[in-house]
Image (cartoon, rainbow, N blue to C red; front, side, top):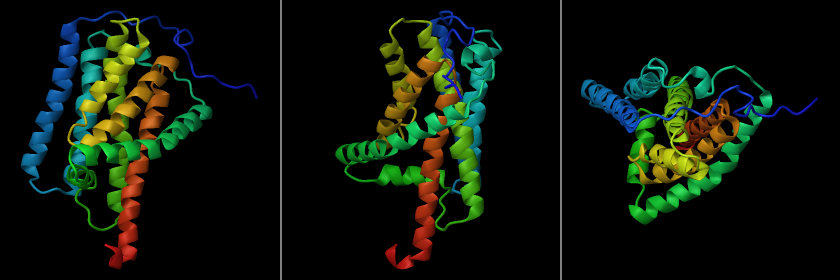
Length: 256
């Protein structure tokens, strides 16, 4: 069977994205981040204690705010099309799944090591990383299938889709229309993606790596599918490891 290559810009039948104004970028950042911060504040006010339900609502807020910004300010305003985002025409290959998942898995050890080194160097402890883990897992202290599947759906699937639509589909495309320098737009969108995870310095470092990789994959394929697969694999692996650690400690309580 002939090898199936990811679609290039020409294969997608698209041209270079039209340049957009700096006001467009400001709107994307303000509305995207602003709406998410506002909605997160509402969730925090309604649920002062960390819980599985509150965490899932935050995942939904991420999906609605970032995905909604991409649709309303990008697609609906005619600034970019679904084809321009890299979602049409729909072309699928299982090789893309293997490629995306393989890249994510190969990056996991290096990203984890980098994150821990930066965390210890800057903060000297794991407090912010632990706080982020607690938030993702809804403060769960014991393994539960409901907690696992709800976290996997929210953090492992919904969040990667919305973030790839926003950071790669909307923001990276804006830089694509502004500069011919591939390295500059990859660096710019990757940096914004990393800074969006500023609640933990270790996650900023690890996110910077995946942001650069996904931006480059988006450049090479002009499709969001491989970046989405990489992101889903990365987040889902993190959820799996967190819940495996809970299950392990539940089986061997003397080690906790």
